[in-house]
Structures are given as C-alpha cells and as structure tokens.
Image 1 (spheres, rainbow, N blue to C red):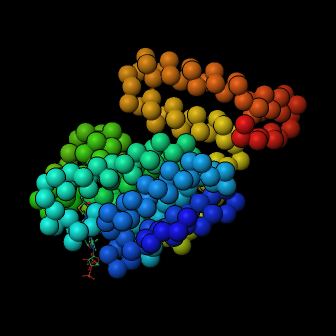
Image 2 (image 1 turned 120 degrees about the vertical axis):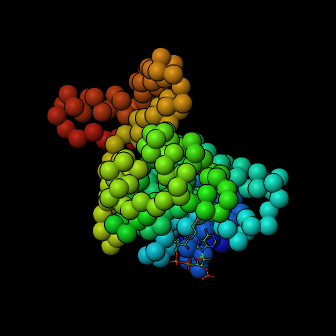
Length: 260
Ligand code: CAA
C-alpha cells in the first residue's frame, strides 16, 4: 500500500497508520480521506493485520480538523460530497472487523475529534486537546461529530462542546469517557502497541464478532441487540477457537488460538 499522506508500518500483526501532513497539523483533505478509506478496506482482508493503530505525525497534532483551506471555497453540493467522504472513512473504520485504536498524540479537533470518535478505543497523550470548534468557522461538525460524540459522552456534554467550540484537555476527556486512558506522549505508541498485542493474544474470531456486536448492536433497540448478540454468540461455536479456548481451560493450559 503506497499512500501520499499516510505512513503505514505493519509488524507483529499490528498496522500503525500515521497521518502525515505535518505542515497542516495533519488536517484531512480529500486525498487523505480517500487514502484512509482505502487503507481500512484493505486492512479488512490483510491476513498480516489483526489490529490497527491510527495516529498523527509530529508531537503537536493527531488531526487538527478537516482542511479549512480546502473547504473554504466549496459550494454546498461540494461540501456535502466532502462530508459524505468523511462519513465513508468512519464507516470503513467501523465496518473493518479488526479493532482500531486511536493514539491521539495532540490536537484532535473537528474532523480529528470525529476521526478519533470513529475508532474503537482512544488512547491519549497528556498534551492532547479535543474539541468540535466548527461553530467558530460558521459550520457544524460534518464527519459524524454531532452524532458519535453525543452517543459516547451524552447529549448534554456533546451539546456544550459543539455549541461553544470549547477545547478540553486530556484529563477532562478521560473524565467524561472520551479517552480510555491518558499516558505521557513518549509512552503513547508503546502503550497502544501493548494494547494491540494483548488483543492479538485472544481468539481473533471472537474479537471480531465482539467488535461487530458492540458496534452494530448500539444502533439497535435492546431487544434486537440482545437477539443479535445471541446469534453472534452461537456463531462462536462454529469456530476452532471456541473448542480450543474451552478445552484449554478444562485442561488448565494456555489456549492455542488460530483465528478460525
Ligand atoms: N486545516 C488546514 N490547515 C490547518 C488546520 C486545518 N484544520 N489546522 C491547522 N492548520 C495549519 C495552519 O493554517 C498553519 O499553517 P501555516 O503554517 O501555513 O500558516 C499550520 O497548520 C500550523 O497551525 P497554527 O499556526 O494555527 O498552529 P497553532 O499552534 O497556533 O494552533 C491549532 C494550533 C489550535 C490546532 C490551530 O491550528 C487551529 O485552531 N486549527 C484549526 C482547528 C479547527 O478549527 N478544526 C476544525 C476544522 S472544521 C472541520 O473539521 C469540519 C468537519 O467536521 C468536517
């Protein structure tokens, strides 16, 4: 995979994707969004990749938002197309069966906050700042911020962040459940890799169904979601990993998972 604005390193089952537009604090333009979408579609079928870590280049920003210079002259129809592309990226992250960890290494603003929200888990460095400052630019969040933020942190807090455009620091992001964990910046990628390795040590068949159950089930009413969970629970029993995982427990030995 060769991309203009993404750096991708794959090792030990983990792909580290670095958004690399440091001069614009890794802002998301059409090219970068297209590359992100393609990368996540490719990861779904890449047997060398079990977990993906998404981060930004440099020490200042994860992603400082959608690219304001690129957006400023857009017509309404072009802006709608641009927003839809952003939504397609978030969709490809959610639809990717493999867990995606955002390693938020600095500003995660506007489209950057939305990109972090599209990921499954958010690890955050102490210097990280989150916000949806779109109202300062005369627009609203366009890559799912009004929806995913409210679903994650609740309607009242999401309203406050979106209506004021205020930024919050890493500690506050952790307090309100936007960040899973806060670590020193120099430890961020190692912490993300360790988390990825821990997940890779589990049965990948189950890991993928678990992501699917949470990701899709949250959009259903509780009865339907629980029925959906039962179906996926049943599906686990079609796997080698279920037989092996339970047999290994009974024999008091570590399981040897194959991902099948
Ligand atoms: N788009 C394009 N360029 C950006 C950018 C963005 N979102 N954010 C930063 N940059 C560029 C700056 O223009 C600047 O470029 P030059 O050196 O060529 O002037 C460079 O990155 C460095 O930025 P600053 O000089 O501003 O750095 P700073 O340390 O003074 O401030 C910051 C950092 C607080 C993140 C500030 O850059 C900032 O407020 N950025 C914009 C944040 C924002 O409003 N994001 C939301 C965008 S709208 C959106 O995302 C819509 C959506 O939901 C789809």
